[in-house]
Image (cartoon, rainbow, N blue to C red; front, side):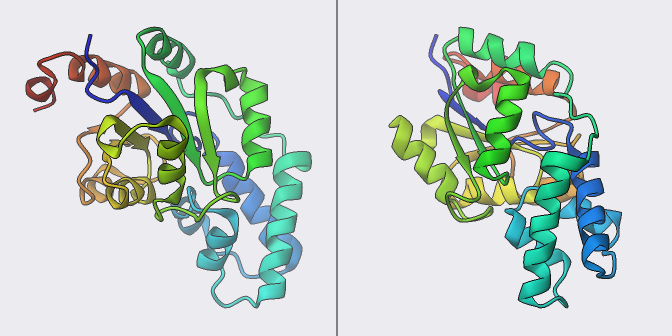
Length: 228
């Protein structure tokens, strides 16, 4: 079977893992620790997907560099050691990823998480073996810069035309476009359908099961017709 996209690159938070509540809680606690005004839950949700330093700078433009550095440090402490909010994989993710690998797809991750955080959740979920490459925001420029995707393409030997970026934010869709890559948006994360649709994804899907079904329809010789 000829696959339309042979390499599928996933965002992590809000796409594979339901970690939004924990991220918001940890940002809120970190800002409180430093004594800065709260930006609000909606604003905090909106920056999920950016690298941590870029997220803090976006959320707290009035804060000086020292205060932002403190927020970053406190966030990491809350996320890694203090907060115990459960972070499950979204329904169907584990089974879907395993099935995609069995069908011959190669899978990768491009995430705003730091390497330490990604390695932890890969270990905790037992999914590290499913991915041939991973790239994090502390190893490259933050989304929407295309460097993470370019690094993954270099590592795997695929062209942008052979790859697909799947994510829940406009940052993911912009990153894909900047890399010359197709994007597939999911609406169950932090950015809504209308906002995602502005950035030209191949589709906007409401569950991981729909992502899996879309990939099944898009594979094979008649992929172009199935996608349209």
